Amino acid sequence: MAAVCAVPLPAAPAAGTPVRHTHKYVARYRGVPTFADSSSADNGAYDDPVVRAAAISALGRYNGAVVAVDPNTGRILTVVNQKIAFSDGYIPCSTIKPTIALAALEENVITRDTMLKVGRRKYMNLTEAMAHSNNVFFEQLGSRMGFDTVSKYGRLLGLGELAGYNLPDEHPGSFPTVPPAHGGVARMSSYGEGIQVTPLQLAALSAAFANGGTLYYLQYPHTQEEVENFTPRVKRELNIGTILPEIREGMLAAVLYGTGKSSFDRAATKCRSARPGLATITPRLRKSAGSSPTPTMRTRKSRWPSFCAGIRAA
Image (tube, rainbow, N blue to C red; front, side, top):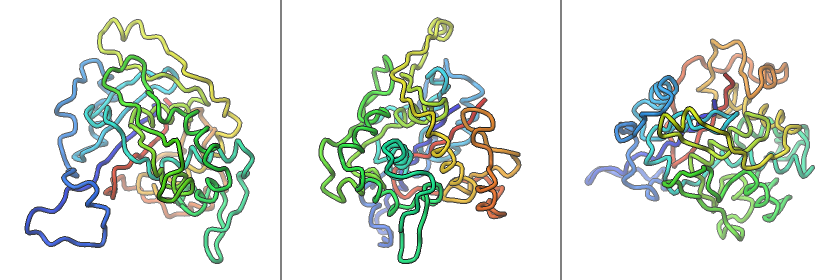
């Protein structure tokens, strides 16, 4: 199952409440509440009840959305908070980085072991940069590839187009036709500047990473007949199977000891990706992770509308 979670910003302070100026970006999303009953307005009649219950439990009291997809068919198993899931989209922030990493590997701009300078006396390879979401590393990748190449791979992976088949409420998000005025292709490659990504697009992309490189049209059955007669529809074959292990290793490292370590399930004996064993904890990752990951599952507050993607095999 591939799952995507979108978590909006905390609400603006009430009138008369002193405003802390530490985070000036809050003003861009005033009035967006942090907490809500995110499933109250949904129609989940034909969702997978087990998957839906797990998604609602995982989202908890946060105002966000979860899209769960079967990566081997493109069938949407559940959508929690359908209003947000079918929205215009959000700036992808650091979830653009796997796309940029894939482009850089495919274009031979780097290998998994290429070291780039990210500080005065600090260097990182791709796994470490993905684990710690290092903006400087990905800005360099974007600058080396250029806008046209970054755009080519963004669009190849489905950004800026409808992810679903016959989903009348879906929006295509947006993808720039020229480098963004603020930060250019560098900021576009580290933060997603100028891009609007929907939860559905991110779910489709995550599913393609999980299944080995097939980008499916997402389909959301709404009748029992549609469930029984479901037929997968392939949008395109990405032919990225040979470089996916490097991408998955970086995503796994983020959970083991990087920016996503608060979600690491220490009780699990191994982390699995699209195929069992393909993204198990390697000796290199185990050495890097050490004993730092915490067994506690918790959700960190988001500073801006952001997406958190996870991939798991059945």
